[in-house]
Every structure is written in structure tokens, then in C-alpha cells.
Length: 585
Ligand SMILES: Nc1ncnc2c1ncn2[C@@H]1O[C@H](COP(=O)(O)OP(=O)(O)OP(=O)(O)O)[C@@H](O)[C@H]1O
Image 1 (cartoon, rainbow, N blue to C red):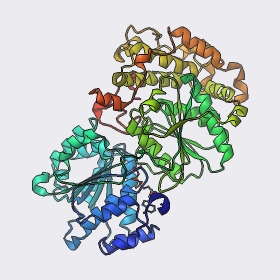
Image 2 (cartoon, rainbow, N blue to C red):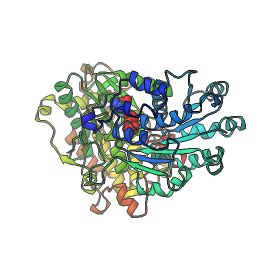
Image 3 (cartoon, rainbow, N blue to C red):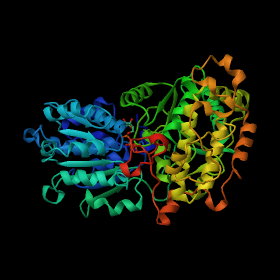
Image 4 (tube, rainbow, N blue to C red):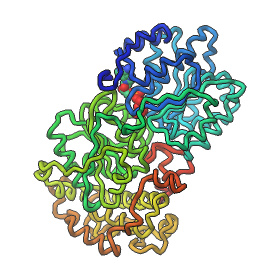
């Protein structure tokens, strides 16, 4: 529930009850909402609910209701003349899970509508035929979609015909929907809809972040002179005020996992209802950390953990979202697939292991906590390569912190070593290769040179217990653009190539007690091994990581992110970075 005092929401929904459709007013009451959040006050106060608008408000401040209520009111005002076989309101969002979440909110809002309003979800990852059959035989008056699947089904003329009477198009996470990854799909979708100029449909664009470059593209959906609403003061941080932000510096990326272990151990001891999201750099890293802390490794014994990234099947992803939404405590190890828009109740802590692709993504990740007026905290664990982010982004109130001294009692290094010994070497190897791809993609943006990206990845491998970097097939090294770069080990990428033979046992993990003799080397040795594998463990100063803001200024733009939602929460195909064996990161 929104805490009105904290969110400055003091105006009651009842003040707009004469403008909002009565069925929606009743539903809002059923949902238990009394005061409007500032952004809701602004959109529901618009003189014309059919006006085009660009709306920016902080994360977790109720933007979903802020666009659904005016759009649904305008739709329902047509009364019996609505053709329910046609799409009237179309909402487009970047990820499948967010699309589903918006649809669920819409169902709650329209629960008292007579006749009932159907809300259809058009997303990838499930049977296209079954979904299309439901759509064509149903009454998809409200449709929530992700761009890829929508673009796909709109190639069919009979589907296009269902959009002939569209009244409103909402782009949620509009800056993401209009960025270079999604824009081609959005443009194709727009070509399949009746032209805005003649059909006059309403465009609504919502996000917590609106980088200036979005302004040049808005004309695709918004007409000149559209309303502009922002509840964010230019002088304040773009993150939620009630979320203190800290960074815990570590000497090497090899120290990240033990530090994370210390942090999570202390937090869960302190709070019986500790619920956190840990953002990881790649989908493979999220999968690996999940195994280290829970399913295989058990570094957080008797504590529930989940994973969420694009390498999972859609049913697994859906089940995870459902479970983690309901969970009272636990940790979700995630890629950026849940970095934007997802509303998991009662997240008290967001941890970021390493860099985000850009400062806007930082805002969205931090915004998974401190929602609906509640408090929360955000912590980053950063190695020297990454610390520049803090310096380059003074707009964020990030304070440097040390790990709670209580963490020293939990023997994190040992717990992580034991856990890593039980994780399949294939997963560790693919996490290493994905991390190399991640460093490479940042290099394109930040000018980190290839040799430095290799050194960084090799430090990461050392942290996973590899005495020397795991081998990568030559053709894959070539594909990744690392041919001839020093520090990589070329060879067949097979378990027998596992470092020092230490990790042979991991595939069929024996109980923890049986694995102690086969532990990976202590971290001081692994760090030395990494150093031996590369001339230096740190890139030259000029090559350190900078933020996307700097790169924008330099005329460069975004780092590519995982198209199906892994790192980047689902961008378009152009953004795909193919890493070895068809891996995405
Ligand atoms: N007026 C209100 N009173 C109480 N709770 C509310 C109100 N409006 C929305 N909420 C709740 O606040 C939470 C955040 O809402 P929502 O997901 O729409 O935020 P958002 O601004 O879209 O966030 P993000 O920028 O992360 O997408 C949800 O749990 C929602 O149910």
C-alpha cells in the first residue's frame, strides 16, 4: 500500500470519482487504494483523458494505475458502442513478465465492468498458435503485449484487422521501448496500426527515466504539443528518496561472491522476513549464483532462493515470478529481465553485483525496492574496474560502506569455496565466457581494451576457483573478436579440461561433507593464478569503465543487452550479443 505521507499522495481518489468510470472507482476501492500517488493525481487530473502524454515519475509510484485508469475510462465511456472483438486499448511493455503484471492489474481494475472486459496477453515464450486462437476467438478489447510477438502476429492481415479501431496505445517503460533495440519492432508495429494522423488514436508514454534522446523519437507515438508530466524535481536524485544507496568496494571481482555471502548472511540473520533481489551481470552468472547459494551449493542453507533470467523456460519464469511475489522471505538471483517494472512486494534490499549497462538501468534496478512508499536499501559490490560508476554519477546519493563486521564470523570464503566445488564446471565455464562477452560489450561503449576485458574475466574465473582460465574453443574466441588477445586459453571446452582436476566431482554433487577434499584453491592462490594468466589484473587507467552518460556525450550509445530479457530485460534482435555456443549474456 502506498504510504501517502511518504509519497506525498494526499489527494483522495474520491476527488476524481465523478470523472473516472464508476466500475473503476468501485474497483479502486476494492483494491484498498484511498489516496492517489502524485503521478496518479496528475494523470487523473488531466483535463482530457484522451490526450497524448509523456509521463515521468519515480519507480514504484503507481504509474500502471496512472495510465490504465484514464485509458480505460475513455474506452468505457463509449458504452455499448465498443466493438469488443476489436482491440481498443493496446499496452506494449518490454518483458513478458511485466506485460502479464500489467494485465493482472487491468483485470483487477475492470472486475466490476458489465459486460466483463477481456484482457489479452500477447507475449513470446509460449505457444503462438494457442495464443493466436484465443486472441482471434476472444474479445481482446484490452491487449498487453511485448514488441516481438506483437510484431510477429501483426504480419497476419486478419490480426491487423482486429486493431483497426484502436483508441489508445500505451508504451510502458517508453524510453526502453523507443531505444535502438526495440525501435525497429515498434516502428513495424506502428505501420500495422491505422495511421495516427488519420485514425487519431491516443499515445501515452510512461517511464521513470526519460533520457533526452527519447525526445527525437516521440513523434512516432505522440503528436506535437502533447502533455508533459513529471513528478520528479530536476534537483533531486532520480532514485526513490527512501532508499539509501551504498557501495561496498572489493579489491578484485574474485572477492565478490564471498562479500555477497557475508552481506546476505548478516541480513538474513537480522531480519526473519529478509527478501532481496541480487542483480547479476549476465544470465549465466545469475544461474551460477543461484546454484552457489541455494540449489546445489547451499552457501545459504535453509534459506529460499530463486533464479530469474532468459536462459529459463517461460513456464519456469512464470512460476518463479508467482512464487517470489508471494514469498515472505528469500533471495532472487536475477539478470535484468526483472530490472524494470516488476513489482515484487516487500523487497527490503537490492544488491547489484557489478555494473549496470547505464545509469538509467541503475535507477530501475534500485527501484525494485522502496516501492509504494515503503523503505528499502540498495547496495552495490564493485571492484576497482567498476568504481568509476560512482564517481561519474554524482546524481546518485551513493555512500561507500564496509561489510558489517558481523560478516567476518560467517566464514564466507570457505562457504563459497565449498559451494563452488559442487557447481558443475560447465556452468562455471559458461559464466566465465558470458562474463568475457559482458566485458567486451562494455568495452565497445567504454573503450575498455580487449586485453583488459580478458584480464578482468580471468579475475572473475579465479573467483570461481579456476587456477587458470578455462579453455575456450578457438572458433568461439574468434567469433567473440578475441583472436590473438593475450590471456585466453585456447582449447576444447570440455569438463576434462577443468582446472587442476579439482572440479571433476561437481556434476553429481555429493553431500557437502564429502567434497571438502576437492575444494577449489583458496582465493589468494586463485588470485595469483589470475595474475599469472594475464600481465596485469587491472586495465590501464584510461580504459576504466565509465557510464553510458559519458558515452552518450561522446556520441556513442547503449551497450547491447540480452534480447529475450536476460541482461537487458528483453531488447530487440539487433542488441543480441552472441557468445560461445549461441550463448547470450
Ligand atoms: N494509490 C495507490 N495506493 C496504494 N498503493 C498503490 C497505489 N497505486 C499503486 N499502488 C501500488 O504501488 C505499487 C507500485 O505500482 P506500479 O508497479 O504501478 O509502479 P510504477 O511506478 O509503474 O513502477 P516502475 O517504475 O518500477 O515500473 C504496486 O504494488 C501498486 O499496487
